[in-house]
Length: 246
Image 1 (cartoon, rainbow, N blue to C red):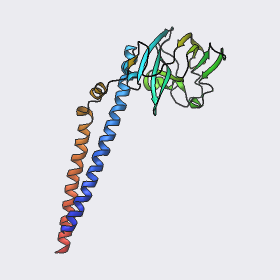
Image 2 (image 1 turned 90 degrees about the vertical axis):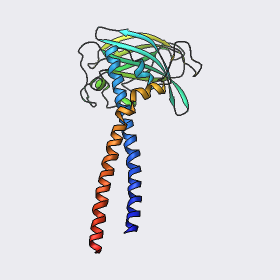
Image 3 (image 1 turned 60 degrees about the vertical axis):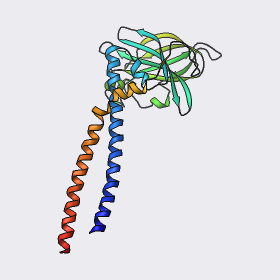
Image 4 (image 1 turned 90 degrees about the horizontal axis):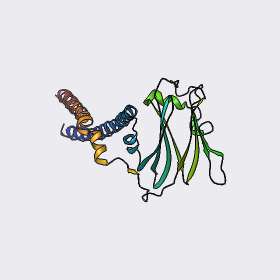
């Protein structure tokens, strides 16, 4: 009987540790996911994407806003990180300001939403350097489905040189709704031009995640359920074995 108790306690401890760390990880990741969408909702409501972008970037700068009858387009220069390499990204965030057609399914084949980026400087001037219609990552995906998820959609385009660009944006029906020029200068982190803001401070992110409110209660609940269940199960097994041996 003593041997059984020792084995059961060891197994219970192992299960308890596993449940603790799995619950903590899942609850934390879920809360980060929720914060991401909360910041997305706030960005749409205020037409200010700074916090949303700062959560995912090393540094960023808003460089332009383009407004049409149906859309507001915010253009950002974002410094990101891929493994140990810092990268420049050209980000466009598109928010409808009135009712527009958009995809309700990520595989909507009728969706013609897209972007075409034409380079105006250098030896390859006037060449299209990026477009969703030929980009493999967009194959079979409806760009405007982002409006179903977050009420906006965005493009993030990597670059590594100074660019003078012409931007063409197309809606669900394939009609061009915005056409403008944009210059952007490649940066070498951490030597950035004035005007760049740092990514989200770790303390501020921790405040948004608020583990005391959103993470630890789930951890306490799951551990309580486990401990109570473990005690009940252990007691039943103990009394069953004891009675059998009598």
